[in-house]
Length: 98
Image (cartoon, rainbow, N blue to C red; front, side, top):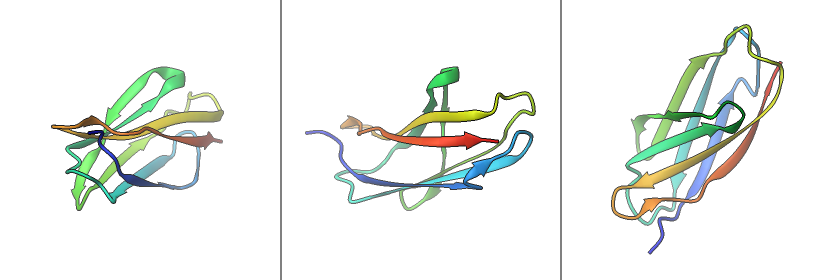
């Protein structure tokens, strides 16, 4: 059996500025198992990040974007993981860096 869920991703602010702080909140609903952890992968830089659990199948990432980061659109993939069922489906999100 595969690990399934619905996922909601909120990024604040929606358009990120170089040198600015940002936050992403990922909430899983309609899961067929507990979400053990949540991962994000920014493919352009091959950076993977484990998000911090905040309770109720919700995970958070907070960070500051380096001033030298190139402007543009970045694709990230986010997914949940269950210890028994493995990784669930990945959701693609596009982030704009101004």
